[in-house]
Length: 142
Image (tube, rainbow, N blue to C red; front, side, top):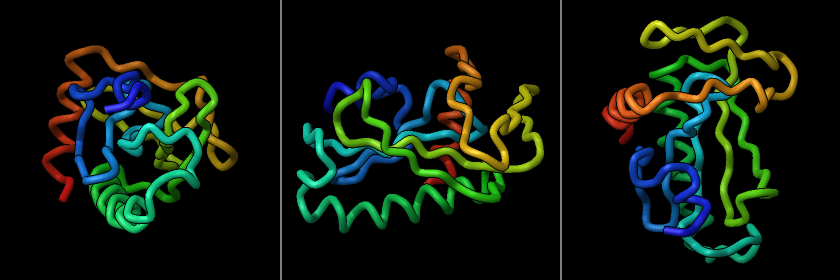
């Protein structure tokens, strides 16, 4: 796995692995169910990914949206390719909603709704919360 994937907590945050992609729980939850969709390649430019990765990305996105629709009932979903600090190809997947979501007694507002997500308002999960959320989401991924 590349450095970006490791920085987002792999293997502890792994939800689903594909041939060219991994889906990880984002340790800092911008909204409930925030994920990382990361290419396993060392490519630092989206256009450098192999064609097979682009084809498989559709499958990964479908799995993400199905799981998050079930888990968080999002109203919109944002895929942000930021790659300023973490250089290998990856997307921040941010489910968006107008009304507060609560999980395990923790409130997860969408502070940016209806505008851009507020990445600086993310809730950092502790080790136990991270394990529990990974387990809950892993069980609903296909």
